[in-house]
Length: 268
Image 1 (cartoon, one colour):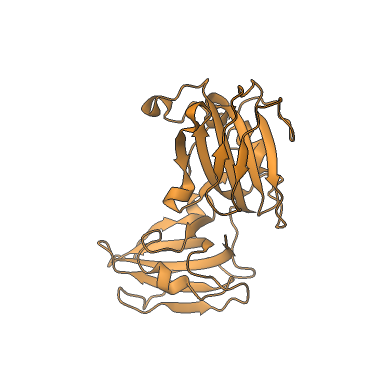
Image 2 (tube, one colour):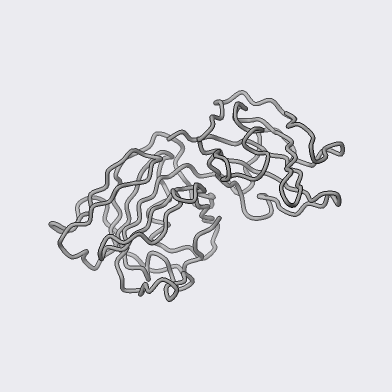
């Protein structure tokens, strides 16, 4: 899921203290929906980026697909606008030269995985002209507070080390039990955690590839909870280890076949 395709805008940022009395207070642990308290003072005119906590993972790089949870709310009235914590699927931001807001670039690039970052900016600069402002009574001049939890940055073609691209096994059919095609040796994937994957999906019975994260721009992240992942994924991925490749058949309204490469996992 990509939230926006914002325009690139010029930005003057400062990391650290804002004007007196105008800094929102954010509480809550990384990976959980933040609690944001908006001060009584005005927000100021200059976009501000504040590192709330520093992670210890790999730093995100230009050209990466950055996976992050984000909570967005209006300064006025502390009104919620959008939150990936509610939908349990982090956003994917592709920094490969596409149109991405410079505020997001400044906030997300160069940050270690596990970092929590706050951006205070006008909606026009934070979201860009492609965001559906008119559908939410939000004007470009309205100030927004965005809190990002950086899950990690990955090259768009990230794959299991030394392995070829995944293909659907010829004998995989709806009703087949999950099958480990490659055993991983990394961290165990737990129920309720976020998992970072690349995958291909094929229709049944045509066995035609209908979706591929490789074709769409890179890895995606999902929360492993019932209803938040495609049919069959929860039982197939929980208990696997990072570095695994798993074949899964889904028995939803439209049966699908998947091969999933587990690139990483994040626990709240």
